[in-house]
Amino acid sequence: MVRPISYLQTDPRWKNHDYSAKGEKKTIGSAGCGPTSAAMVIATLQDRQVTPVTTAQWSMAHSYKALNQGTYYSYFVPQMSAYGIVCKRLNTSNLYGKSSSAAHTQAQNALKNGDWVIACMGKGNWTSSGHFILLYGYENGYVYINDPASTKPARVKNTWALFARQVKYMWTVDVPETCKNPGSSAAASSAGSHSGSAASAGASSGSSSNDAVYGRAQFIKDVQISIGAKADGIAGPETLSKTVTVSRYKNNRHTVVKPLQRYLSAQGYPAGNADGIAGSKFDAAVRAYQKAHGCIADGEITAQKNTWKSLLGLR
Image (cartoon, rainbow, N blue to C red; front, side, top):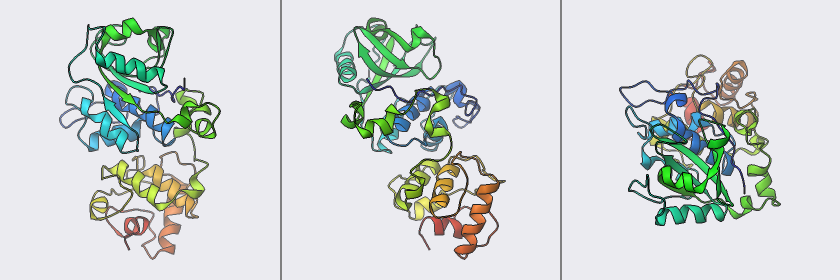
């Protein structure tokens, strides 16, 4: 079995990050088990730069945060689709207290096949109300779990029988065959090189070894995901209209900072490690880029203005 990167929603790096619907004040730490579970999948299978901050921002931008609750069940399929990951919802009626159903069989078969299952749990071992977890293995009657809220032994490994009684809703996630094969180079690069701990996950520490070949199409797609635009990798009026002002002093921890850091560095304007924080190196890189591309060299990438147009290839 391939274990995904393990993220905890209570990690100090993002537990206090906003995760709110209009009219409330919530955080990833208090309500972000859904986007944290999604981030584990995406960071392992597609983009090591993705963290719960990325997915929480996307969820809020697309109105998947439920008022005074957690995340709408409709969130997972489109969130995964934005990264080219196949995700399927298995049931629409609550399975809590039912130990067998077609959805149970599908989920267990998926795990046996090396795929993963996102599950919304009901009251019991994993939660007192509702909670999303990520299952990544089944063996000898036990399920193996990345729980975004806990590393307690009983919550990261338990019997299928207990899980089946307490689960409410499930989604399967297709894991590529290259990832399932531990001997393949793709598996090593996507999952095998991770220890599974949030602290060691490459998605949140420094720049990627692929930054030097980080192209405009991927940059545009990452920007679109960060600002809530259609993620097709093609910039147009909609993408530009949703851009935000970013500088060392404004929105300096916005999720769009990380793709900006990567792209500037790839273009020969060293912006420092892709840590998602716009500091002095970011400021210097932006000013250098602006000077070279005929923009006002003030270090600010102003929403909808010339620096954004240049970066997105719209001028």
